[in-house]
Length: 281
Image 1: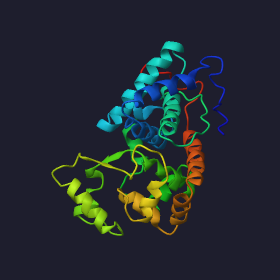
Image 2: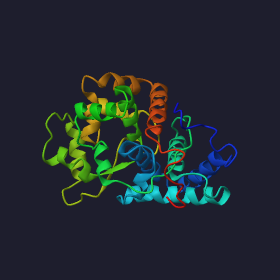
Image 3: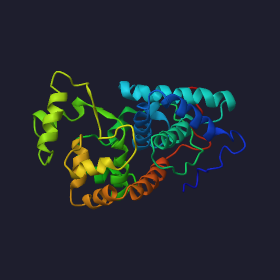
Image 4: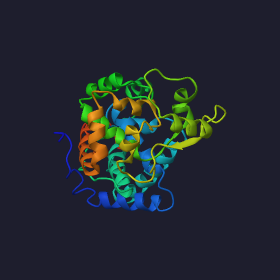
């Protein structure tokens, strides 16, 4: 628990905040739930870049991130209607990430509030965000730098249980070969057919059930059928024990994921006396 954040921060100023966010998220997902993964990714990248301060929302992203940002802005408008100039975009993003996971069958967790928004973004901070080409050693270092354990790393990687990735993010595995890669040959062959060099922006599911939050991602990993090189790196000796644990028991994964999200959501927030409350995210 953060000493600066609190579950009761909006108890008097915006008591219906969780219900407002849940209502908009469920409405948005009624026809298309694909933005759930985008919202979760936005929250993860926001917290990893400079801390959970909403600064990443000011960055121009790809079409998938833009889809998530559109949903976040719809949530923000609904919140502003009930609680004007009160709730930060950083808090809305943190709560929306939880509601997105719940909406697709995943776990809930406690979200603390009181974050304020950064008035600007810093491009250099983006370098701290783990890329899909990192090795296990590099991933562990990035997460430990943020005070997150190896177990947190593997659990949070389970966020790839939902969503899709563009072919260019893993094309090196298909056509160039990546040292230390153990991708299943039949799986690789299917990916090559779906992702020819002429279609770098084509989308491919991150796991066998991309609209359901579950532990099939870890089972696919053990079969060497992960999309991203960084995911396959979770089979290295320091991490594979957690992969096996989560593949064997979905509730264990859910508990670890929730714990990791709480820790990540408390990374370096801007609080009272600093930052701002943006009117639009």
